[in-house]
Image 1 (cartoon, helix red, strand yellow):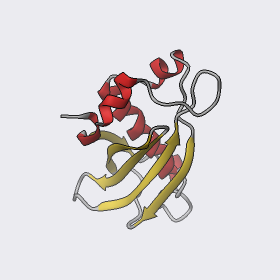
Image 2 (cartoon, one colour; image 1 turned 90 degrees about the vertical axis):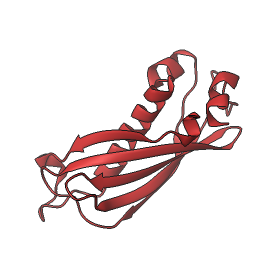
Image 3 (cartoon, helix red, strand yellow; image 1 turned 180 degrees about the vertical axis):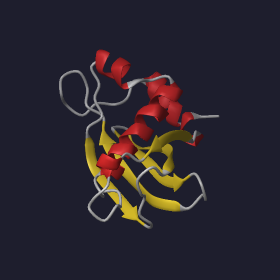
Length: 135
């Protein structure tokens, strides 16, 4: 399976501190969960953030989108499903779906787009061995 076809699954349990006064997860927490999914996806393909940064590369977020469908609540067990694709030689897009494990209801979906920044702090192409993951 190519990395681009890989679906990473990350588990999260909603903490009380992540909810608002209405008992629903505060909207910004979904972006934090997207990061968990993205980090796990990269780790599963063999390119961790730690290794990436050691090689001088960074993936800053340049676009983020989240569509909220049903609110998650305290103590819900969630699954963050993550996939990825290369959208240009210097951009990667990750797609996310947040699903409640108990009933399989999709709570939110979204994506983030990341620029590839190289060792000198400028846009850079991904190393060939990483670019090949998206082929």
